[in-house]
Image (cartoon, rainbow, N blue to C red; front, side):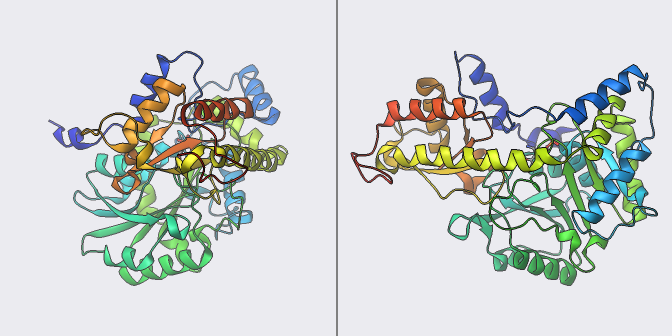
Length: 406
Ligand code: PMP
């Protein structure tokens, strides 16, 4: 019974979290969580909701005021053609982005339908496709292209069974950001091959270089695109669990609504009022977080550059808050074994350096040979991790980029 779920893998992030509990004074660069606190506007709105006894059942798709604010945000900020007065019903409030993705996959996929995904990619993408009996088809991202797709390869991966393109820009784990030209070509492919697009824009506010463009804002694309957002990263609300999707097609939306109802009834009332506080309040935190994240990115990469012999290397990402770094195999600890290079290095860093990270292979076969570090942790934790790596691997001779003592 339900044996298809046996082939849905657990994310290695869970195994790493368990390993980290046995480490004293760890540097938790494995977790994709920001060290910031949610803004006062969120906390006071939640306190008020409790005082006002807003603790009862709500509309399945979300509190009307929250949906109204989200619809206006999608139009004004993301340039998606939604009329806040008429199209509020397009918006479905979800239990974080991960729940939104589950709902979309269930609403779009028939068993055996193929979904093109980036490789490497955040593991719940493949996991949710598989849980809906779909088939994820990984297409490599290329480090040399700033972790973007070769779009000819995307096109060649399309078969008669392909139904959906899953686009994630900025990307977890690589931090790659697709250009407007990339999105235009993807839009042309989706139109020509009659595909749906799931556009995961969890990191829409964390772009350091260039601009964030929603593929749903391109001409005619909202008809076939379901954009997916979360309050987790933009408002430091990871534990509160609040996300949303917008679906224009009434039939698909009704299917999604059923899954939303049967999995959640409605999203936690107090949290939804927190979301209203976030969108009604000052938006300064978004810029402040981005500025601080850029400083942390630069601090972390300076430290990595100072390690001897290019043990870890890679260019700073254009978006999101992850360093996805290539491991020099000559530095891999332990005797060669069946365990993958990225897992061996991860275990070594956890055991000997107290540094949490995630093996690249956990994000897809094309991620093997890399490690993901989250640089959204506070500066002290980042510096501690760098110092620990310097103890393990040594410091390059001379200043700047290594090439020093191997
Ligand atoms: N998409 C991507 C690419 C993510 O990295 C995340 C969070 N790690 C999410 C969606 C969803 O986040 P949440 O469930 O916290 O809203």
